[in-house]
Length: 237
Image 1 (cartoon, one colour):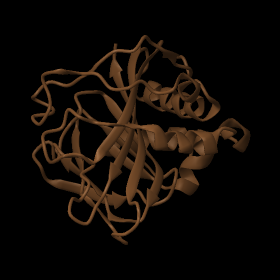
Image 2 (spheres, helix red, strand yellow; image 1 turned 45 degrees about the vertical axis):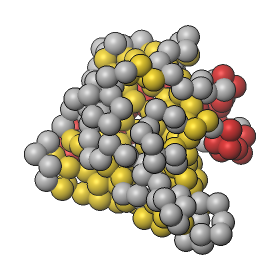
Image 3 (cartoon, one colour; image 1 turned 90 degrees about the vertical axis):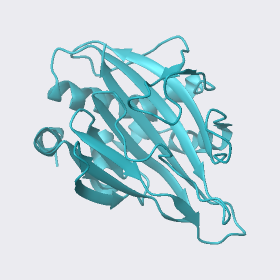
Image 4 (cartoon, helix red, strand yellow; image 1 turned 90 degrees about the horizontal axis):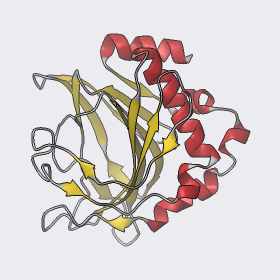
């Protein structure tokens, strides 16, 4: 598959599941991911998301905002800012500015993140040419316990209020479930898949589809259990 093939799929279906063995070459050659082990390890240093209501203490995250000019295949890190969604898109915790700990600048500007952003700029720029982008990057860890399953999308099936979103699996450890479902704007199911291997990726056209992820549960309740993903969103700036 080429980026042009993926562009055509997203343009016609408004979403795509890209398995790891396809996604990995699209992101770049092995040397472009030279910091991958350090990149993955950075998920061990995320902070608890305290904006979720009581009883939702399973999500850890960091956040960064970048920008990209039309036609560019690179993105520029911006000063740290809050994350904001209206209640129309996030009825659970929308309508407020949410300040999360920033992503480590060395991670944001490192080879792996640079490659993911370059791929995203190329793909989304092909879908919407001549567009300047506001880009938000989120590191998420969803932890699961036997008495409290982790919910990757506690707001339920939803839209993010952006143009495009990319969800890249970083790691799955000792969990089951976590199935991504994609729905049309009327709520009808269009497809489902599970991000199971590092580099498995979901891409959605947020204007045309909703998405959600089922709760994750531990396989062995005596061991740590979590789901790590990188979410990158693009919105017209």
